[in-house]
Amino acid sequence: MNITKDTIIGDLVAHDYRAASVFKKNKIDFCCNGNRSIEDACTKKGLDTEQIVKDLNNTNNAGTSNQTDYTSWPLDLLADYVEKKHHRYVREKIQEITPFLHKIVRVHGDRHPELLEVAQLFGESSEDLTDHMVKEESILFPHIRRMVESKHSNTPVSAPFGTVQNPIKMMMAEHDNEGERFRKIAELTNDYTMPADGCTTYRVTFAMLKEFEDDLHLHIHLENNILFPKSIELEEQFVNT
Image (cartoon, rainbow, N blue to C red):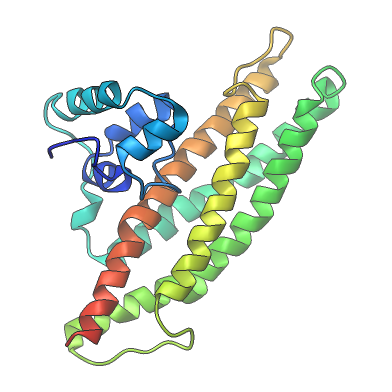
């Protein structure tokens, strides 16, 4: 892929997820705000566009990527994968991280009051993500699967919400909210850096939070930059036939 300043971030990461490492390093949002050009993102953050493009090309040219090509997957398979892998991960990790967070708040909260805000933000995220995933699993994903089946059987498909773009817009807005929450958590924790007086539980909690954020970035990327736009394209095929 020829990477230029005009390359759309989400398209690039969908083509080769290795590019995400460059964007993460420079704190450029590639999942929730992946519909921007590299130049637009760099200008907003005051970064050297030419250097970022150079770094991306170096990453892109560093041998054959062993990353999974999710863009080649059927939409119903991708929806199943997001649900079985990422939704399950979120539910499991919420149960695991929450008591750890509460413990370090009790032990270290007096010296590190920012932990109270981190715990509050994670609690809000836990509730909203749980509701968000239920909506995807009960409304949006089943409709995507029906569209795939309708294409194979050449039969019409309809939905009570009208165009698939309606629930997609809602899901993307909720993704934006989660992205903002975790940007705040990363800021409060100095990018999950343990303070000098932190204990083992402190370190483990921060490691789990960072892993959770990294998985959420991939999770949202798969939906915002691949599953959702391809679902809209599939619906448009029905309209144009």
